[in-house]
Length: 137
Length: 137
DNA sequence: GACATACTTTAGAACTATTATAAACTAGGA
DNA sequence: TCCTAGTTTATAATAGTTCTAAAGTATGTC
Image (cartoon, rainbow over all chains, first blue to last red; front, side, top):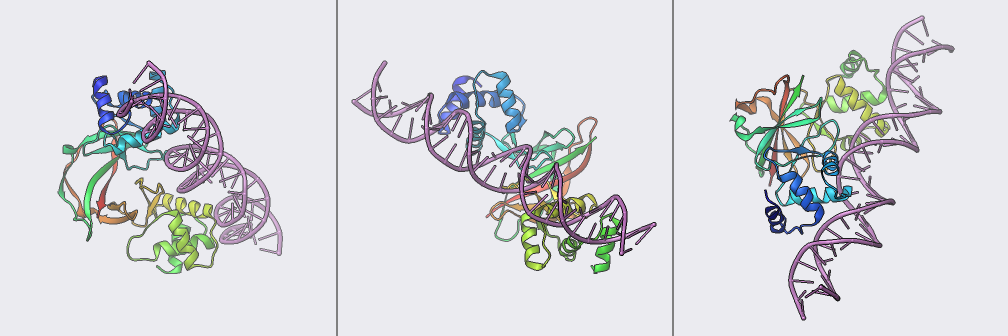
């Protein structure tokens, strides 16, 4: 993704392309494979790969803004470290979770298919469905 | 479940049947249907239903002890309230999650069956599989 | 390009869930 | 009854996240 399209991505989401947002967006979205991270790990990567300074609050703000704009997913997993996981893969999909390493691995939507699914309780609708496959060694 | 069997349950798990543990065990395990709760909600229920005092740390200690003994499950869901959910249903099963109310609803294991599942990454084995179906109104 | 203004970033404080601490208490065996 | 290891307790500590309000910046207007 070229810089201009990063800028467009931000602008079209109503987000001013500030230095911090552009760096974070470049880091997160200029990649082929899906990327899983926590705020902490992202902060470390950014510190290593850029010369820009990022306040912790900015990382949080930016991730929430990206999530709201639909550019990021939050994984609703409570791992043992109790941090929020984000995922650059915004399509419907699932995860392996390795509690030894606290790592997530994507599972494509088409790698899990269902034979039988319950219907939603009365008055409710199914928004989406997340499968977590917990791993051990 | 009679009081004696509560005591046995505790003793056979290597847990001394203290007043607090017995009260919590009675509250949690003397019921037909599965029960989902957070530490906070359990504390409120206990305050209402018993005259025993429970320090917050005791509730945490007890729940962890029960979990370790296999009498309780922790649901690996990070809901919007960011609290840990416990479940008296210790069999393999799944959940609906209603983010409006932050409530969990059990889904029996046999209500979800798979057509296709991925295999575990190299060197890893599947420990278990949790499905969360997110609901909306 | 300079200006005004609304949007952003920032450092640090505040907040919340959870865990650790260390002193007081208690179950259960001798 | 006494001893001791296991428990409970209040409180402090910790960790992830959000809030605050002051300083900085992108962008439209002239």
